[in-house]
Amino acid sequence: MNKCCKRRPSACSVQYVHAVLRSALQQAVREELIAPIVETPTVERQEVRPLDAAEAKILLRTARNHRLYALWLLLISTGLRRGEALGLTWSDIDLAVGQLRVRRNLQRIKRELLFGTPKTARSLQTVSLPKRCVDALIAHQAQQEQERKVAGAKWQPALGHPNGLVFTTATGRATDPRSLSRMLTILCRDAKVRRVRVHDLRHNCASLLLAQGVDARTIMETLGHSTITMTLDTYAHVMQTTLKAAADRMDDALGLDDLRDGEEDDPGCSSAA
Image 1: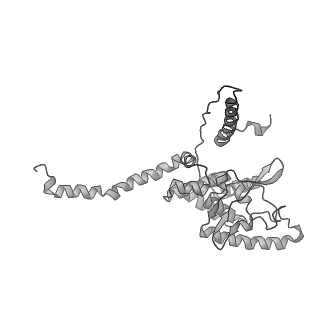
Image 2: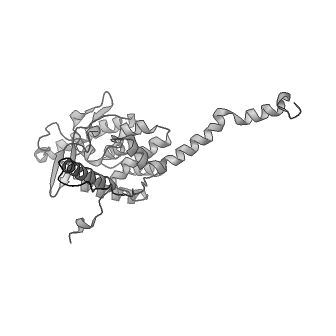
Image 3: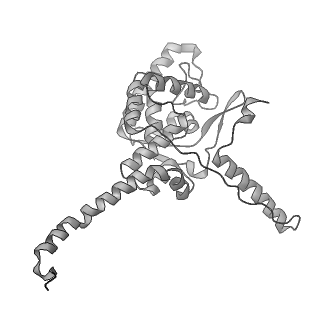
């Protein structure tokens, strides 16, 4: 059996297949071709275990000398999917304003690298960039221009994208998503942090935003989730720390200690009254 056939589908893939199947069968039910028989599958979500803030800093510090440092910083800072980041062209980025537009993604399908539309309609979004990302992209643009000069006639921009992809090989070609995964494995090893997948850097973004007190609705918009339920379900365990901190701050907000002291000093609150 082919090795790839043994891989378990993700929770999202199972739900997507079920939704398509359910839609088709509901149509068949309406046309009285079959009786309703499909039940929603029970899917256990895998717990998200991104790097913590300290590990993320170590990873980025180690990646500073990597030629795709701007990409690693972008993935952690904005939560873009791997294919979305690799599909960016310079015309998608406004460095003066500090924004980028997600318009396509890059995927490997069998032996080909193909451009397609992002995962969901909500993924077609405009993303605000932190200043560090803008600075890193400016430096990356200058580095890429130098690589273009060194490559000379060997420079081969991706077909259909004459403006040039943002994150390319040293000769201008599209970066293979699988190559990016291998690069991250090496970076984790060099940084001596737990090995994570490229997609886990997206989870890192959400976790860091939660730790900074950003609300779930904003995180949903940042990551391009289709519903806030998906955001809450995916990061429920991460949010527990934030919720605990919020509960601890409630005492300060209500000033319960001050109230208790005031009650002891106020004769009107004494039992004698």
